[in-house]
Image (cartoon, rainbow, N blue to C red; front, side, top):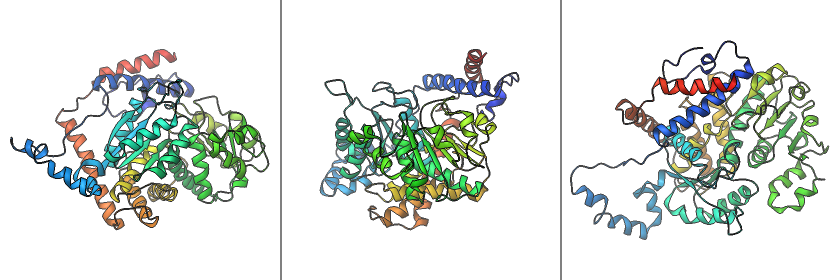
Length: 485
């Protein structure tokens, strides 16, 4: 077993005993990352802090930044509310809003339970997209104790004047559908549901490139999908808008295939997104994921944590050069090595410690940056699709292969490229307040992203951000190994 000699953790597999099987290593990695995350969150007291962006040069600057000088800013915004985007941080600020009812694969974690994830979003927005963000977890329960989507909707409407965009996250279905669709129309700023639109965007990007590697076309392939929550219903919609054939798509939820005989879905108006798929896909009325995978070219699973949700024998029935996306968090529906052994040609997950990370973190920092730069009023599906093709193009320029269909999160050119594509599409769609060229958007996004990254590294170098010690990491590693042995 290798010792942890630095903090990069570039080769996690090498940290574990050579006697461990692939299954044990995969399990140990998950446990190690969880232990390390908990330890580091306690060490830092969370991931985010508030730092001024304006300078202090002497006593009277208090009077400039606060009273009496700031009165001039208040009246300027009163007389022209659009000036709030230029005279405050609103133009680069995103509220990350959740009621914590569906946190990763852990379900309802209580109102505060999503703070770690929401701060994680804020961290990625700043470092990858140069966007400021604040985590806001709310209690959406009504007097009867039920989670009420209208409480989330009202909360977002009330906070909208303070931010340039809202990122919804980890809201359980069916509430998530009503919340997003209502707020997209009710607010004059982008309201983005990252579990749905973000996951849909990056999955489409990965699929576009995986099909190129496999030599297949999106309109020709048979697609089986496991899971019919916010993520997969949006993925299905974006794939169909990008040229997928609904007659060759089968979506399955926990009760079976979605089709016109699913009266349980038709009767529940809250699941209108699922009923739309019942009406447009699966004309053969296939009723199980195992049957849907027979001869399928593509599997896209976003269901429940594995690793035994997707069976190897199901994958072995798929078409040649099968493409398998198993993106449940924190553990995929089947481990990549097992999927490969069963015959999969390309395997993607939502995790960065496996090849082909198909994770919405490739999308939302750049997408929201582009939307903010042109002061967009909303994010259209066409903007999400434009972002997907921009992500795909970044990877294609580097050279596609079965274990590289999407850029890595540390390839910084992805995010200004996405910002540019989104900003240009926003202008085409008529939802941008500002008209800019693609070069102008790219240059501004790149500069602000570079500045954000530089700030973080400067804080580390100057020890304003403290470094954890190797001993702290070793202790987490030992705990993980002990749980697997």
